[in-house]
Length: 425
Image 1: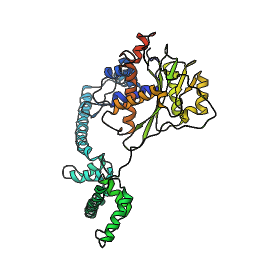
Image 2: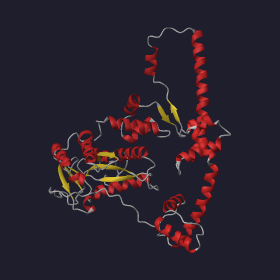
Image 3: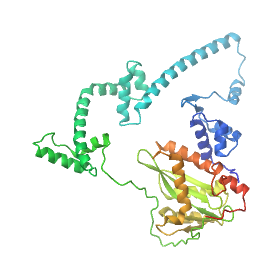
Image 4: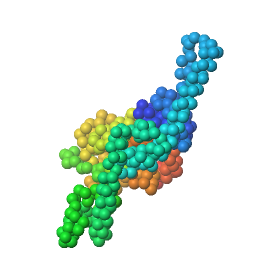
């Protein structure tokens, strides 16, 4: 069945997706989200910022809507031809000046893009201004990259000292690499000790070094000791007197929608080393994502928001349904138990430490990351992560073909096959 009740957050995310997607059209985004084009257009009128990302990545400012233009003209006194010509000429001149300014600024920022996203961002801004000060005035460059001119000139004055320090660091990096090549399991503390012992044995050749400097140089030159990949733990058991039985026993099927649900929390890795977290509520009948929530924490509110979204926005009621999860502390908390009771939901939990008991939710999480990230390991920033995950989650329900659903979307499967289930789980 089609989703009818859209929250304000959903509407604003849909408008943000349309405005920020390069070259996107109302019809295309509306199709992705499973809504009418006119509905999305109305949301854009209500919540839009007036800015739109074009196909080449630039941002344009849309003209006022016809309704606003009519409202502006209402009650205005008649304009003489001479006044109209003067006004239009002034507006034309202002627009040409603004266009010239924007063209210059766009060219500056286009050239600045390659300086950002690596190393020290502030230093890269200083370097950009130094590299382009003969083409554009320093005042304009500093304003666009948001640095103080006095700070830039101070950075420029210190260039000789930085150059000498860079040469010293390069020499130290060569010494570090020689030690690291001999044993790549060594980190900064052990390499520091090795370097200082070698310096003492060689009569202080090369000099003693501090472990903090060694760590910094190793980081700057990409030299790291071997370590196992970090695992993000999203299932944190909590000792509890509550015994919740496993009502599914790995049978992730249902005879009709809104009977059985599974859910889980998964981490969404960011480039800066932090994570966002996604909580899901998935219908076992159609694999439809009935509710979800994304946050920068794993508190109980995360899973409560997901279940409330399923109850209010998608199903209107979850009374009589079973919700199955792992033994994470948020799912075993008293607050979550009270919410399930108030919604008429019966809790079910698999065995501790057995991912197969919640394999449907685990498989969903793996599919989401594989299809969005593809050859990447992280999202560049939280805003991009939220936007891309939001789009994928909505497309998953409305357009993505699912093998369980006989290669229909979950929404379509609920409509076309209301009493048919595949034979295998």
